[in-house]
Structure formats: C-alpha cells, structure tokens
Amino acid sequence: MVKPEVIGIDLGGTAIKLGRFNEDGTCLQCLTVPTPQPATPEAVTAVMVDAIAQVDPDNQTIAIAVGTPGPADATGRIAKIAINLTGWHDVPLADWLEAKTDKPTIVANDANCAGLGEAWLGAGRRFQNFILLTLGTGVGGAIILDGKLFTGCQGAAGELGLISFNPHGPICNSGNQGSLEQYASVMAIRRRTGREPAELGALAEAGDINALTFWQEYGIYLGVGLTSLIYVLTPEAIVIGGGVSASFEFFFPAVKAEIEKRVMPTSRLGLQILPAELGNSAGMVGAAKLAWQHLLRY
View 1 (cartoon, one colour):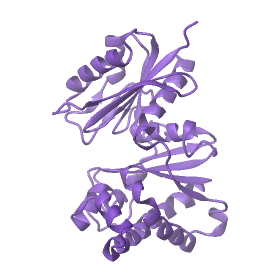
View 2 (cartoon, rainbow, N blue to C red; view 1 turned 60 degrees about the vertical axis):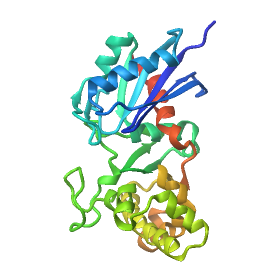
View 3 (cartoon, rainbow, N blue to C red; view 1 turned 135 degrees about the vertical axis):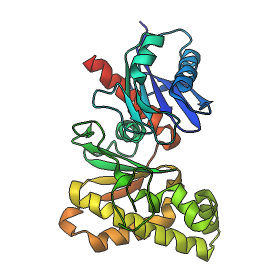
View 4 (cartoon, rainbow, N blue to C red; view 1 turned 60 degrees about the horizontal axis):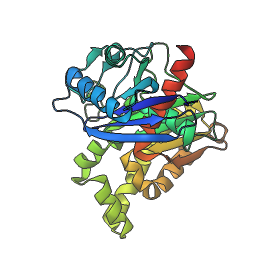
C-alpha cells in the first residue's frame, strides 16, 4: 500500500523551495527554483505548478500548503499581501493551485509555517508554548500556544517584527515607524554597518572588536524587543531563526542579559532562548505539516 504524501512550499522573494513529505516528516524529494522576476502572482503560480510536477512526477501527493511572505486570510485561501513581491494583493492562490493540480491547497504566512516546522521537527518540539522569531530580510514571527499555531481572529496575528520599538525610528514598509524589524533585520544591519550579517559574523569569529561590539549592541536591541513579547505571552521558549541567527553565539549573551534586567522573574521563569534547528527548510517543513492538518479538516 502506497503511503500518502503531501507537498510543502516556501515562497520567497528570490527562491521557491518545495518538498514532498510523508506523514512522519520525512522529506522524500525537494527542489529549489528561482522566483520569477518580476514575481507577479500569475508568474509565480506558473513556476509553482511546474515545480510541483517535478517534485511529484507520479502525481501521488494528496495535498499542498504554501507559505507566503505576508498574511493569509483566516480561511487559508487568499494571500492578502506580500510586501516584497510584485502585485500581491488579495491573491486567491489556493483556488489557483487547486484548479491547476486538483489537490486541496491551503496558504499561510511563511513565518507561521516556520514556527509549525520548528514545533514539529525542530527546536520547538519540546515545548507547548513558544515564540519563533525569524531574523532575515525582514523580521517575522510565529506564536505557538498550547501546541497550536495562533493566528488571531483574521489570520494575521504573529507579526512580531512589526511591534513598535522606537516611535521616532526609521519608517517600516508596514507603515509603522521604528518597528523591531528596523533594528533587527538584515536590512537594518546593512543600513547601520554597510556590511552583511555573514561578514560581521566572520569578523566576530576572528575576534574583531568592532564586530563583537556590534553584535553586543544588536543583542541589546533584540532583548528590548523581546521584553514586550515575554510580558504578553510568557512563553516557555524563544526560538531564533533566519539568516542572522548564524551569529546567535555573538548576540545571545546581550539578549539574555537585557531580558534578565527588564523582565520580572515571574514572567520569565524557566524561559529558554535557543537557535532554530531546521535552517532554511523550516518554512517548507512547516508547510507540509500545515498540509497534513488541512487534510484532517478537508
């Protein structure tokens, strides 16, 4: 008897990652293809359909889930907006993919998918209540409460990078000013230093005092931002993912010290702060988990 399989897709601004998964999370085949430029909804859908056929040549998968860089509606049918993709406003992506593949499809925010992935097979699997923060081009987030992804009444909750941080700070694409994203993202690091995070990480590894000082200051900013989230959610753990997390060892001490200084012990009892484990595959893995969950409701 052939075991059922699903497809998880992580849509990014530069690449689309797909994987074919069985029910225990084993990735049977994966593929990364460039995101078409300009990344219009129609062009992206066409590339996805072609890539799905490559990942599932025998057409044996039974569901699809897609993580997109922005909020989806509460039903998981519509990609509401994707700031870094061209023309993405209220795109009925689930309908389009179902029409092309004849497979039940659901759409979710990519950071929420990463949170599901870490909860299923990564650093969050030991916790029922945790926050995932993804430090990348922007800053995304996911909230897992009682073992379930929390998305709020309209499906758009968990935009942790958009919390207000400095009322007079840089303007954010969201329309906010001085959001945490403007201090903790790759874009913010570039703006402040003129360097890439990986370069600053290598310099810190080599003992460069300026790089080490930068990461200490970065950790302070991140710790301040996390303080608000801890007081609201009192999670068991905070999982840090995204490309910037490669330098976790250099900014973690400052994050920890800042939280211990600012958060009352009663709100951080037993709190663990740890790096994500699934790397760039977290969104794809989480999308696969979402596809399995969708099948149960379908």
